[in-house]
Length: 205
Length: 132
Image 1 (spheres, rainbow over the protein chains, first blue to last red):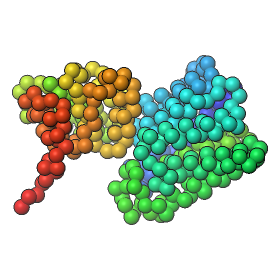
Image 2 (tube, rainbow over the protein chains, first blue to last red):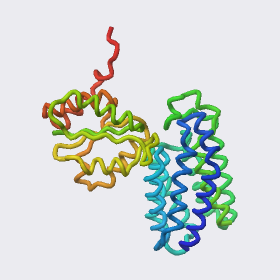
Image 3 (cartoon, chains in turn brown, purple):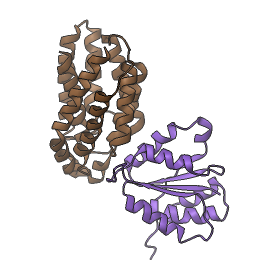
Image 4 (cartoon, each protein chain N blue to C red):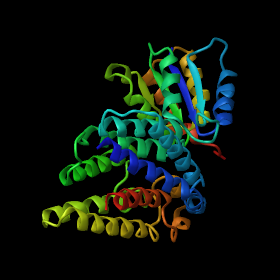
């Protein structure tokens, strides 16, 4: 199972690196313009770790990803993604990651980011992508929808959440200094979270 | 004496603020500055913050001064790596970086305790620039 999660995150790293310019462009409009550079640097190191390390299980794997991002990213995304994966490492199953476990991982990620960033839904942050995604998965589960269609719904919810950040006036992060000027721009953090979620789901499906 | 840790996104701001503060005192107090990422870019790094705090004299407590949002997040993350008992020694100040550092070292050098130093640098008076 750890081989599977390693393959998924290797692909996640590739996608983040491929989108370096796009994320930086989004961040230049409303932030400090380093989100793409920061994320690409962090995930380049993640790729290196995946290539050179033997992992004991999913939990140790996610913990290593977390510490790598914390050590190398630099911007707010370091502590935010780091805390998210650190929390995930505490609840993830070392065996097959079940539907229920995936929801549990999602909830622990939300809890970590909320705590670290002191943010809630609708504040033009990465949570605007992640919360709807996890909520959608929970809703599908409660309706008895199978995992594969549930993941498709989840991806759709994540995309809608990301796009919903466009009209919001930022109150968190560097964008909050811009006030009204942050309106009309898609949040870079919500976008990188979407790229991560999309790649994970595409790999599972 | 109360220690002061300066945390900035910029290595130059961190170093410069420390220099400004050092001008104010004759005898050294526990004072360190961390700025930038591990590869010298603008940003902050929880590991570097942890290492700086770990090396500092903690007996009378340490006040941490930060500049922008993610500096705070990385400080919080670094503090979580200390034991609960050690964590009680650290306080993140609600104070401006430069004024907080300058006044903070002065207060510390006068051997005021952690609460007293905090009270001075967190006071609103520190923010007044134009009182005409």
